[in-house]
Length: 170
Image (cartoon, rainbow, N blue to C red):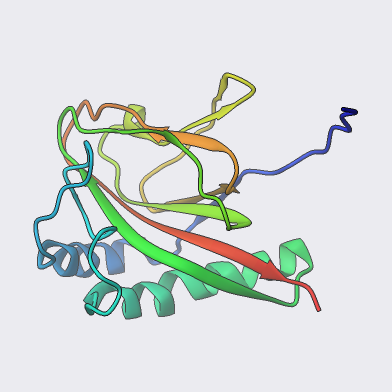
């Protein structure tokens, strides 16, 4: 097998009105059923898709869509498709093992609550953890095939909203 190396990108985007949306999104998430998944404290990942998730509409309109219209321009695409949206909350010692997101061009992690930067998503490429700086109120975007994890939470509760995206070229 012959290998040709290509570059890929990891994007970090600011959400301009994060403080305006944070408490409302957290309230809507708090109203969700208490469902754990593996070692994640609370998530809506396993809730059937026909059950309404009240935070989705606000998140899509105020955060995801403006971000993705900017990314369409950046990647010189024609449009985007959001494949899935879900939240995850982590309390002390909860985590998510290394995994990837097949069937999506990019995975996005919106750090809604990040009281401890050491609890940020770990990204692994060729068995090497990629170092990056991120803050609460930012979105981390990276290729869906890349391995990533949530390390054991050391501090207060961490809340993320993740979403998978595909870019369309006509």
